[in-house]
Image 1 (cartoon, rainbow, N blue to C red):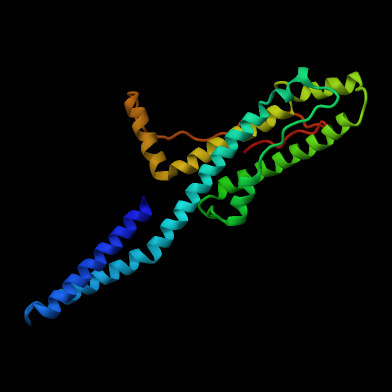
Image 2 (image 1 turned 60 degrees about the horizontal axis):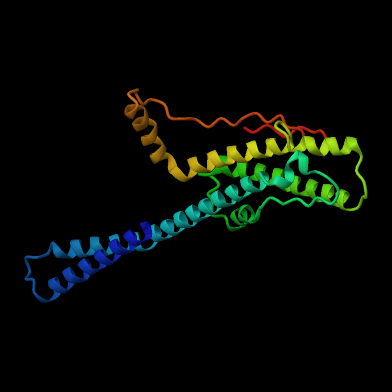
Length: 235
C-alpha cells in the first residue's frame, strides 16, 4: 500500500512537471516565469519519491513480510510443543517426536530483512529462541535414537522422560520462551506510533488516564533440561 502511494505520487509529480514545462514552452508569455521553479520543484519531488522513498518502502514491505512469516512459524511451533506425543502417558520405546521449525528464522537472519538498529531487541530474542529450539531438536534426536534402539526401558528413565512434558518441565520452559518471543513480535509489528496511541486510547476508553503503555516482561523460566540443566532466563 505504501509503495503504491509512493508510485502514484511520483507519477503525479512527473505528470504535473511535464504539463507545466509544456505550457511554459508553448503557451506562456514572458511573465509566467514562476512556472520554471514550479516545474523544477515537481521534478525534484518525483526524483526524491521515486528513488529513496521507493527503496525505503520496499525494505519496509520486506520487513513486514518477514515478521508475518515469523508469526506463522511461531504459531506452528506452539502447536508442535502441544503435540500429544510429548505427553507423559505417551512416552515409551519406539516413540518418534516432532521437531520445531526454524526455516523462517534462518531465512530472516540470512536475508537481513530486519534492521539491526531498529529491531535489535527482537533480533537478540530471536537468536536466543533459535539456539533454544535447535538445542531441543538435538536432544529429541538423541532421545528418539535411544528409544528406537532398545527393547525395554528402565522405569527411572521412563519417569525422567515423563517429567519432561509435565508443567515446570523442559518443554514448559521452551513454550514460555516462545510466548515471550510472540509478545515481542506483536510489539514489533505494531510499531512505536501505534503502541503510543494504544497506550493512551485504551485507558481512556476504560475511564482511566492513559499515561503509560504496557511493557513486556518475560516470565522467569525455571524448567530443567534433559540433563538437569536450567533453561536460561528470558529477559
